[in-house]
Image (cartoon, rainbow, N blue to C red; front, side):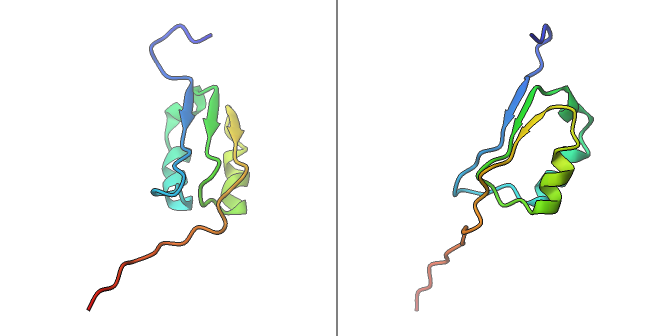
Length: 79
């Protein structure tokens, strides 16, 4: 149990809104506080296999599956 006021879980399950990509995950990897987490949930995002392997190197438990490989961004076009 964490006695401080720091969170022990970070849930980055963003669904279809703005998924976490490799670009955003790099910020997590470079943040020293990420290793103070107990659990990092980055499932249902847009992470590559190579980024998933990097995240597995963290000192916290990492949940990565499933990823949204079929995510598409639709734009509305009008004349």
